[in-house]
Length: 430
Image 1 (cartoon, rainbow, N blue to C red):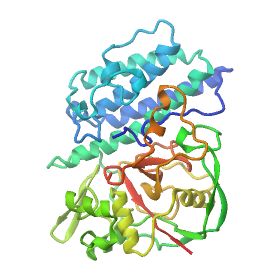
Image 2 (cartoon, one colour):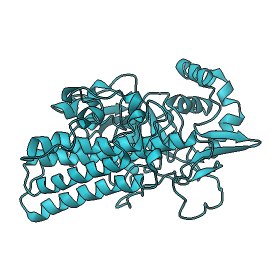
Image 3 (cartoon, rainbow, N blue to C red):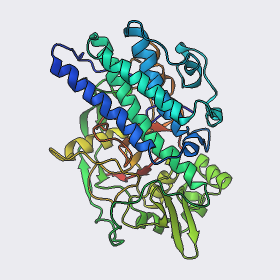
Image 4 (cartoon, one colour):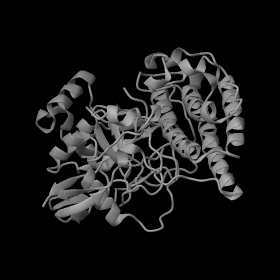
């Protein structure tokens, strides 16, 4: 399967950054160092053994995420723009390439957990070597290099999210249920989610897609018109408490609610509840990066597949929104001057709005927008070639770094995927 949240998508801002002033250069350096440090901060609670484990082919070791994002800057920036740059280790082009066919052969993805060498400490030295060279490069580099730096930083932010979701999957298989991070404060009372209300969407032409101002991956554009019928969309995602009602009503045992492929997935995988849930007597428990604990009814249900989301919607007499409906509603109801949501290892209780702590499945297949053109060169390999057998998710999750989310962001996964922080909200025709 492809790699990251947008499958390591490649596109750069249409307006080229310039380096006319020292202030501009310093701002880019500060952003570069901040993003790179965030990766190290996320990896810091992990032991060398934690950083090497690969729990399934769809996941990658934390050490690999740290190395691959570094390889990106070395391969696409330093080798092209830095005079007399000394490559840290030629073997890393094979070990830490992901899916860039134009760059050369690469280590098989399912075997990344077998890469015990370089160890975590050596990967840290690799990162320091590349960072030092990148800081020198940013003193003087052409606009096309600046555009690639911005792409590389957004790419690394994708891997920051993957680092958390991948280690969560690995830790969940450990019978001691390791704690990645202790919560800053004890959870509040387990309340019900806020009352569900509806936003209406008027029939007619609407505009969606990235307009070219600021950064956007190539699959987010171009901006274009879509016709929508009258509809309404929920003002918040479905909660754990609401999903418990679906389970209690035999939702996982009633084929009438499921797509054919979804029902096959239920039977083949033995699904009875969202991923990471286990029943302990009468209590549903879940594994979180804070440790194992009872599920909370006021949190958004998460770690569900598209199939589960669609089945719940059918059970509720509703449907999933299209990605166009989601974006139109989100644009109309986005908070003004809202504070950027923090990066957290676990979703917070659900609240009304479109900036939640879960990626939200839509009913839209992942296809190109009218006029889509993949970015030129190796960095443009990803989005276009994965536009098949995937469903679109919108929004952000608790693990999305602040500032990385956009209303036009198109996440995509296969319909059976459950290890990401994925949930959903409802819609219906009117």
